[in-house]
Image (cartoon, rainbow, N blue to C red; front, top):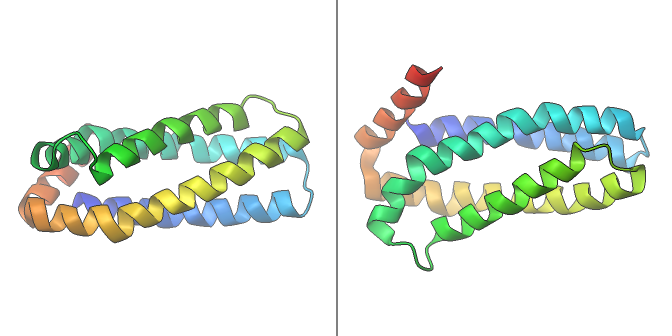
Length: 143
């Protein structure tokens, strides 16, 4: 398996969890269960971002450079997403949770689209299947 295939599978799981959480928030569900759902999403989501930044992004930056690359944008979004996760899991009020979640939901979905439609195809082209498979083996070995 290539690392980008693993990341795509993880994205699908995150979108499913976002859909469930959004339905709960939109229906006016209680904030305690929304916070619990956000916490359940947080751990794998933050690990996913960590894996992207440790394994995939360095090779892309080496080929594309640091300045004005799609990777730079994704790294900046990871910082924003991480901050939003911190706010969602820190016992916010229902109104604060709904407000932060709306922004989090939007940026995470847009972020996933950027990765799926731009960065992953570019990764396949620039890095090749063999390198992407090596990266995936590194994740598997680390578990």
